[in-house]
Length: 263
Ligand code: SF4
Ligand code: SF4
Image 1: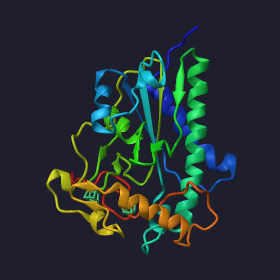
Image 2 (image 1 turned 180 degrees about the horizontal axis):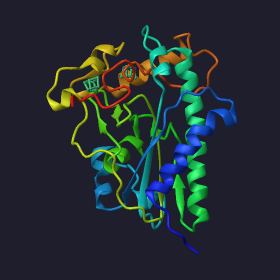
Image 3 (image 1 turned 120 degrees about the vertical axis):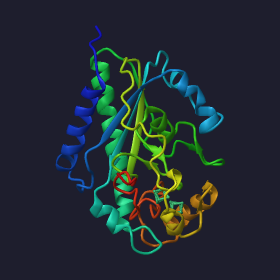
């Protein structure tokens, strides 16, 4: 038998899960309270192949009968963001944070799936990362684009995803047959300073390989840098083979920890 689930029920669960995760697992406590938005899996998502990648999956291709998309953001604490500021290479803690946040996102996604299934609803998950085409460097399931459509945040010039808690953090998403409706957190069309006519472009200046420009990000150049950081940078030695990180365009910026627009 099905019992109803709401976006607020999911929010309460993710907040509790993330809040208790570090103490429960022994991981370093590097996360602020998570954010979550839901959207009806309607015609808006038909824009994904145009917005993200021609072969981007639609919710119904991930799960037959999908009725809702759920996207969540786990923001990093300011202390971690500050640690990654200095120099042109990511600090080791940033790499470790990437790995531990992937574990958290996968565990959190499984927790939400269990909750939904216990109430009689179908659910399909995707991995926290590396769900992209290695040749074209675009995701066939883009958490950022889903977050955009669900109103969880907006894109910055640097292609990072600015949420009400900033862009320093990680995203996860799932689809479900539960009817959750729309529960966006952002109504504004843009949250980036530059895109709203203000002076900024600090993210452009921060990139060590000039992969960020006012037209967006050069994915290939960025990917080359992430591989360099992992294989030859020195700070990530011994970390997992998928720890492709940099994060210089995520930290110490006006949009790193919150919405940068003047009020
Ligand atoms: S650093 Fe400035 S220009 Fe770049 S994404 Fe953030 S707000 Fe926009
Ligand atoms: S992640 Fe690093 S290399 Fe990639 S665009 Fe941002 S600052 Fe540049």
